[in-house]
Structures are given as structure tokens and as C-alpha cells.
Image 1 (cartoon, rainbow, N blue to C red):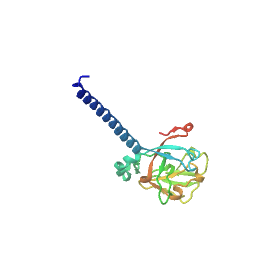
Image 2: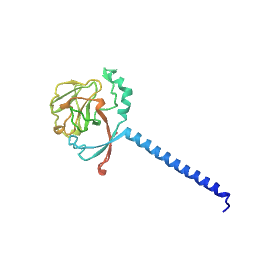
Image 3: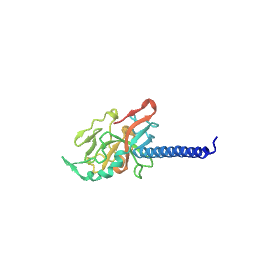
Image 4: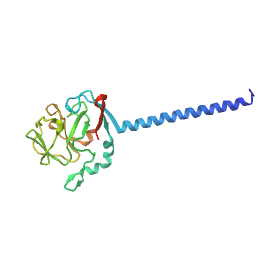
Length: 207
């Protein structure tokens, strides 16, 4: 080999090695950013309670969307605003019937809870005759499968303040929920359940 070619070959190899290293670093950084973004937007939660049976069972795993939680600070002013009909605007984008994960607290215990949103900010809620009444109308709840709803600490009509949610489990006789610990502030709602991914034979998407 021509000795004059050796430096050129070494330089080319060094350039190629730096290019490969740079591509590896860029790929690793992109993967890290993607992981951080996904971790911020969604969370995974393993169900450890029976309070949502038969909709969800202990041992099942779900994906929780945190998107509403992230945009809430920009919409927090809407919590005290009133739309037509004197009804507070819902700042988290939650709807009645959505299933949510709630952070632990001294009042609710040391574990996160999975519950269904029953009452929204501005609603007047009462429990009587084995059913739930929202703003004077009996709420249709097919997910309780005929189980009666009994009142515990909360029976009389309760108007939910801005930013407050009334949550209950579908397994009404065996659920620690807002009937005991009262309405839940929106800041304590981790996110909304959007997907059950385990077990594989029970995968279901919740829009």
C-alpha cells in the first residue's frame, strides 16, 4: 500500500466513526425525548381494588391519559366562569361517566383509586330510592348492573363547587368513594382511563 494513502484512510475511518457515533447519540437522545413525552402524557395503572367490578377487576392494567391534567393550569380560570344557564365550565374536559384515577390523600388512603365521575362542577347531586339524582333527574347507570346506590355520609342534595367532582365505584356496595370522603378536587385527579391493555383477552379502548 502506498504509504501516502495511510493518513487519508485513517482520516476517512475516523470521520466515519464520528458520524456513526453522532448518529447513535442522536438516536438515543430522540428516544429519550420520546420516552419523556409519552411518560408525561400517559401513565400505567394496575387495579388493586374490587370497587369497579364488573367493569374492571383487580389485576387488570390500564393506560391513563394525563393530557387533561397538563392543560388544566391554562384553563383553571374557567373553573369559576359560568356558561349560559349559570353552569360552571368543566376545566378538565371530563364528562359524566368517565373513569379516572385519583391520587392518594390522608382522607382517601395511601393508594390511588379508580372511580367513575358521577357529578361535575356545578351539578346538584342527591342519592335516594337506590338511585342517583343529578339536577333533579334520575341518572341512568347501566354500569352498576342493577345494584342499588345507598347513601352514606352524603344523601341530601349537594351542589358541587367549581373544580369539585363526585366519584363512585360501579360496585356500589363495596366502594370507598365520594359518599364517604366527599367530592374530589380536580387537582387530585391523575388522569382519565383510556385503555385497558391487560389481560390481552380484555383489551378495550375508552374514548
